Length: 173
Image (cartoon, rainbow, N blue to C red; front, side, top):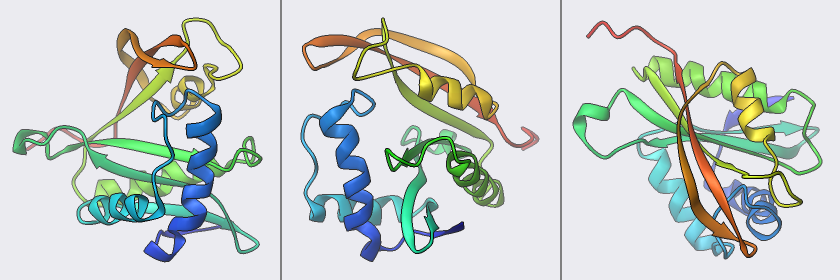
């Protein structure tokens, strides 16, 4: 397995991975798959300030992770939101852990201390959403710090959203 910085040329495969989650799950609350140009624009915007990694195995991209703005105020500059998506057939192989570890190391070097994950959470697990993402983040050292009730509506049903937090540095500034 190889982890490297994502490049704009990788956008088509990354969008292919993401589109599954938009169309078939409530993991993403987006209804429509972004265009390739829109996705490339998102990548460019993120990469202006934050790391964006992908994981390849045998030359095939299996997943990606990136950090983004938590809140757009200077006081939040030591915090960020993290995101991860794996190819739907690539779960349970350690890819998520490897991607998040690479992301955390890059963020530590950047002076980031607080990581936040915004996670869709089912009221009751169904065919569109389970608690797997919350459990993955818990396994990675995140703790649940907030919950919003019935804030996302997709597939004719309501979903909750949880925020999870991980501290990766010292608050000594």
